[in-house]
Image (cartoon, rainbow, N blue to C red):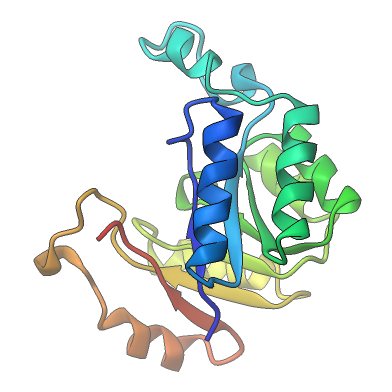
Length: 186
């Protein structure tokens, strides 16, 4: 069993708080920490979006991310990176990244997926909200590496009625060359 925690953006750009989250992860004895990494907000969000100005304050610099990743590894935790823009891939060559994770909303991000093709790092694919055909296409496209299909319901808080835990068996039968994982916001 491999267990990791995700920090997402609830650090809100506060690096010292992010270090505390990493320390809490270490105390909980997980294997790794997943970071949603975004360097260039303009590649990810329109400047006309109502949350743009707020989101801009939440973006860590490349140097900040280097400190965060070095600290995470110094504590003996593995790195899982969810690149949200092209610049985030630079860390894959610089650090020992255990997994790259592609969010289901990025399944159609052509530039991000082209960049992903340059790396052979094991891949986690978030499948929430994706059709069978979309998942099939991603598994085929990245079949040159280990793939974990992450199922689950990503609304907060996850209601038990919405959690599709039965997909574990379905995916296990459909994707015999992939590992199956589960994530939610319980």
